[in-house]
Amino acid sequence: MWNTLKQPWDLMRMARLLMGGYAMFEAIKTQELFLGLLAGILLIQALFNIGCGAQGCGIPTNTKKSSSQNIEETENEEVHSKP
Image 1 (cartoon, rainbow, N blue to C red):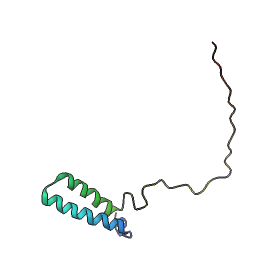
Image 2: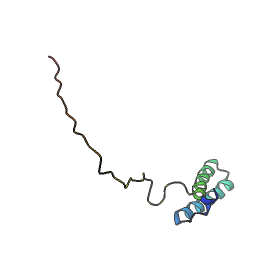
Image 3: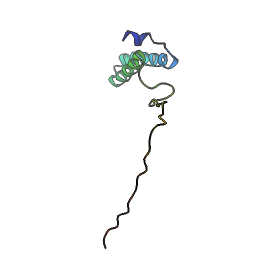
Image 4: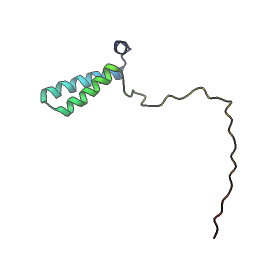
């Protein structure tokens, strides 16, 4: 956990921390539960560096494409129904 906090802080991470802190302050001041939950989510994302970044969410692509993959041709047979 400590290593996650020590990772470099980029602009989006700092923005989440500032927005979450301000939203939490307002949630406590106005006693709004829903705003407090949203503020907590933003603060957790900022502290633990989780969530989608500026590039958006994506699945890492596999850069090693095997050229030795054998693709076999399949033979199809037509099936006719009886009248």
